Length: 173
Image: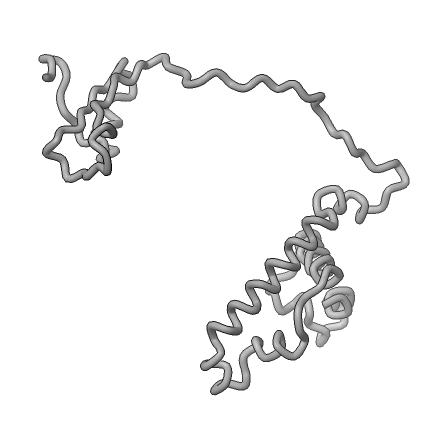
């Protein structure tokens, strides 16, 4: 089954495979003694040689015109650029999935919430579902946190130090 210059190696052991970095091919074999079970005997096959210069399937040719297609005008505001990536369809999908997750979470924690009045989840229940403007505000907070660096998450909403205060964050969210 194996020739003199080929040996059986454990393909799950990356240390053994690293020995073959410059080798033209590796031969492995699935024997019937392996612990693998197949649903259909037709699925049992021997592994084939890995050819060193095999580059895989040919790429699918790119036929579209490259480059941006929906460039905002020179008078565009920053929100216009954001809307290129976060359009109404995506925002509505985020709202829908956020509300779905919220409902699932509340249902799963119903017993716990009945006995613990302090968790933030009670705030979610009182406020109701999220909506598109709230998600847009949340995204604006995230992007601005990337531009305005603060030492802690809490410091974005801290108003006790007027010289470090950024009132936009607590006003927005």
